[in-house]
Length: 338
Picture 1: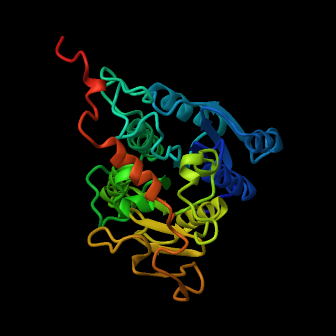
Picture 2: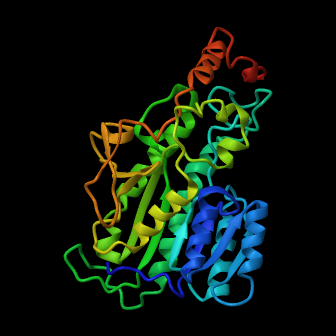
């Protein structure tokens, strides 16, 4: 694919009411790209962004969206198409970080869980895995609908004749590691990374780029608004990446030239980027992280997991083992079979 100019393009971003996705929306708007923010609520800075770009192009609009409801995702897509004529970029970015109300160690119907035995799903998986998959389906359908000359028999060796489209996902370094205290989150992000890899052939055959970033420790409300998660961070040792750094990496993924970006996952830490291997990846940091940029690639970066992970996870892990004793999960199963 040729480099994509963002000027006069249009993007839909779920979860852009805060954090990484808000920073991405702000960055895209600064480059002339219209943005639909699809979220359940907005932080003050997102309200300010909407006010700043409410009239003249590029425009920012808000569509209230619960990403666990498929009809909401469909409505958000339609709202973007109606407002901007078409969508060029779709980012299923909304996510949660192992919330107490939907975590493996608080089983369905336990006191702190919003999941119930009759819900037949974990809310966390609906947000972190199912919603990105469903929105990807909707985005691909939209991109293909814009290419009337498409040949369904084309192969990877055929010249693409399709209107380009980009779908960017937000995975996590949790997909490259294991952590008993965030097991559902890790499973969702690992699934998401592999889902992205499975769609690699869409780029050379249909001009649809599906790629992902895998951020490390990023200072967003997922941490700062949750004291239990913030307690994992040693402010003297751990190094935060900024949400702006991740947003910049995402914009770089959109603009890269070539047909081999689709299906790739880029790990992003504080001052560091690297491609994550699909098989046999050595884990966060890749042993030695190399600073990666469109220009100047090859400069040495931080070693190991510095700038990627939180080092004070012991307390959360101890809490898991306090729960994982005889009787765990049985309270939530009372009444089964009656």
